[in-house]
Length: 115
Image (cartoon, one colour):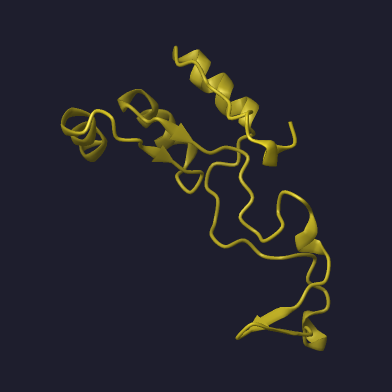
């Protein structure tokens, strides 16, 4: 809280990002301090948004794809690169922001998002 407040005072144009790595209770307490960007509904596994992480499972060692060992054949999909602590959907996060008087703004202008 002190760091975000200091950034806001001394660097008012600084973008402050709050990721889903932080628990929802902490995120809910920090919104009003000047957070400018936040993630919600995140997937951290390779191919998580497209489902590609469930196909062609393999290990990569020094750029080469290696088949999974026999005991690993039951793996259901790619694993996440880090743990997510806030599992709320984007709609749930937007609802929380609206409830405390913050208007959520969606990034919907990027062609990569399939608009």
